[in-house]
Length: 69
Image (cartoon, rainbow, N blue to C red; front, side, top):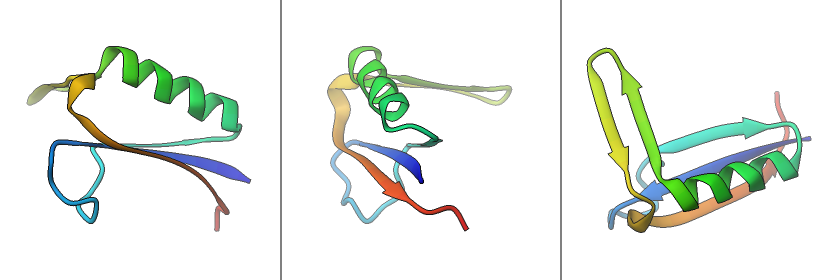
Protein backbone atom coordinates (compact mmCIF):
# COMPACT_ATOMS: atom_id res chain seq x y z
CA UNK A 1 0.00 0.00 0.00
CA UNK A 2 1.12 3.53 -0.71
CA UNK A 3 0.71 6.62 1.44
CA UNK A 4 -0.34 10.09 0.30
CA UNK A 5 0.53 13.34 2.06
CA UNK A 6 -1.59 16.42 1.40
CA UNK A 7 -1.03 19.82 3.01
CA UNK A 8 -3.24 22.92 2.72
CA UNK A 9 -2.26 26.54 3.40
CA UNK A 10 -4.47 29.52 4.11
CA UNK A 11 -8.04 29.77 5.21
CA UNK A 12 -9.82 28.43 2.15
CA UNK A 13 -12.08 25.43 2.52
CA UNK A 14 -10.61 21.92 2.64
CA UNK A 15 -12.55 21.20 -0.56
CA UNK A 16 -10.00 23.22 -2.54
CA UNK A 17 -6.81 21.61 -3.81
CA UNK A 18 -3.91 21.09 -1.40
CA UNK A 19 -0.73 23.01 -2.20
CA UNK A 20 1.46 19.97 -1.50
CA UNK A 21 0.61 16.44 -2.68
CA UNK A 22 3.24 13.71 -2.45
CA UNK A 23 3.15 9.90 -2.44
CA UNK A 24 5.36 7.56 -0.41
CA UNK A 25 5.92 3.82 -0.21
CA UNK A 26 6.33 3.84 3.57
CA UNK A 27 4.29 5.64 6.23
CA UNK A 28 7.52 6.71 7.99
CA UNK A 29 8.65 8.57 4.83
CA UNK A 30 5.37 10.52 4.75
CA UNK A 31 5.66 11.38 8.43
CA UNK A 32 9.26 12.55 8.00
CA UNK A 33 8.28 14.77 5.05
CA UNK A 34 5.33 16.23 6.97
CA UNK A 35 7.60 17.05 9.92
CA UNK A 36 10.08 18.73 7.55
CA UNK A 37 7.38 20.91 5.99
CA UNK A 38 5.90 21.74 9.41
CA UNK A 39 9.34 22.91 10.55
CA UNK A 40 10.63 24.71 7.44
CA UNK A 41 7.66 25.54 5.22
CA UNK A 42 7.47 24.69 1.52
CA UNK A 43 8.99 26.38 -1.55
CA UNK A 44 7.83 25.98 -5.15
CA UNK A 45 10.57 26.86 -7.64
CA UNK A 46 10.07 26.53 -11.37
CA UNK A 47 11.42 28.87 -14.07
CA UNK A 48 8.41 31.18 -14.02
CA UNK A 49 7.46 30.86 -10.36
CA UNK A 50 9.10 31.05 -6.95
CA UNK A 51 6.65 30.88 -4.08
CA UNK A 52 7.26 30.21 -0.40
CA UNK A 53 4.56 28.80 1.86
CA UNK A 54 5.50 29.41 5.53
CA UNK A 55 4.79 26.69 8.05
CA UNK A 56 2.72 29.13 10.11
CA UNK A 57 0.13 29.24 7.32
CA UNK A 58 -0.59 25.50 7.29
CA UNK A 59 -4.23 24.86 8.08
CA UNK A 60 -4.63 21.13 7.37
CA UNK A 61 -2.35 18.07 7.02
CA UNK A 62 -3.58 14.69 5.83
CA UNK A 63 -1.49 11.50 5.56
CA UNK A 64 -3.51 8.49 4.48
CA UNK A 65 -3.12 5.05 2.97
CA UNK A 66 -4.46 4.47 -0.54
CA UNK A 67 -4.23 1.78 -3.16
CA UNK A 68 -2.52 2.57 -6.44
CA UNK A 69 -4.57 1.57 -9.46
